[in-house]
Each structure stands twice: as C-alpha cells, then as structure tokens.
Length: 254
Image (tube, rainbow, N blue to C red; front, side, top):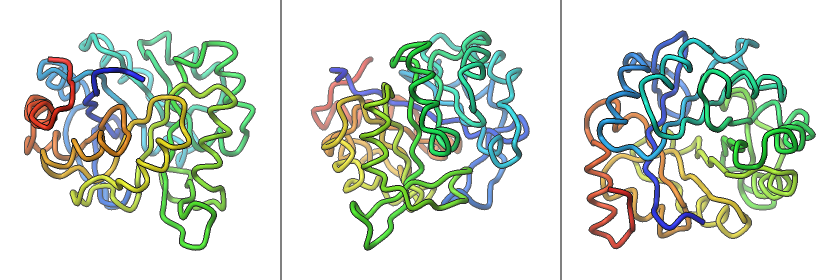
C-alpha cells in the first residue's frame, strides 16, 4: 500500500461538461473539465479521476478529445473510466494521455475483460470501479450496480472485488451510491469491508461534505479519498483536505 494517502478530485463528465448529482441522479452542470483539472493540479491534487458517466448508458465510447486536452494540462496520474469495453479501448485511452483506466459495467458483463486488460497492460493500469449499493439480506449487505448506478445486479460487492483482484485488477475505486452527493460522509462500513478483502489499494468515494469526513475514511482502510462536488463548488480545496488529514495524523504529499 502507498505510505502517503492520496486526495483525488473526480470529474464526472457528460456531453463534455463536468456534472454532479445526488445518488447518481439529477445531474447539474459544474463547469469545464479541462479548466477544473488545471485548477486541481495547481491546488496539489495527487491524481485526477475522469468518469464519462453517460458513456455506457448511451452505448458510446469515452470522449477522447476531452481526455487528451485534460492530459495536456495536468502532470499527475489521470484515471479515465466510462464506456470501456475492450483492451483496445484501453489502448486508445492510454494513447491520448490516460495513465490508468477504470472498468465497471463491461467487466461485470464479461469478467474476462479484467484478465485481458491486466495481461496486456499490467495490473497498475487497471482500476476496478465499483458502484456499490446497500442490499440487506445479501451475503455482505452490498451489491454492485452497472450503467452509472442505474441498473442493480445480484452480484455481491465483496465477492466481485475478490474475483477482480484475482483476475488482475490493480486498484479498487469503491463508490457508495447511497452516500453519493449527500455530503453526509463516506460509507465507513463499506470502506472497512473492502479493506478486509482487498490486497490492492482502495479508493473511497461518495459522501464527502466537510474536511472532517476524509480522515475517518483513511482510518477505515482507504488508501485514497475521492470527492467531486465539494471541490467543484469551491467549498473545499485540495489544500484544505490535506491540512485536515495531516492534523489527524494522516501522511499526505505536500
């Protein structure tokens, strides 16, 4: 695991604009992705995550031009996800500037995709993105969803995480749909459970609303914390979050 905990802004993009909603619904415009990426790079973000949130729903590829322009403005690791269905899609994203690629719906539909990407590019390139929803009565109490959180599955979130890691996933991006956009804090139970089953880094996502929300996610087992709306709205800066983490005894990159 990494020694320093990472702070990662997330750019949820639809039709070339950054958007944000609550529980993956009622998306609203938050700005230009390239401008926001440059701002977060200047603020000291450790990485950026770029998710084309309607690519799978619209059955199209990720917007490569936006990825290219973003990569030209920032010089920190860039993870791109949304609409990735093949190893060739990964190759195209790496060619336009992505450092890592996130897969979700297509990997659930065809798990061999995880093996194919890991075998061709290495585990360090492959981020398994899990959009997780609480489901009482299931094995772990959590299931994964597809198509930007719109379609529930019966696939247990922890079982799928274990399988994907065995197949070659190098990192887990764990997003709580129940907490997404609520600003009520990360789902610490979910983070803790994922830490127990994961031998690779875990990124906690969904629910950040205040500087005090981030350290508990790290203490629950996350290697990195990801947030969107609190950064896009200007409520918090990357520096605010890193200062709060450091004050709580969490090592961060300055």
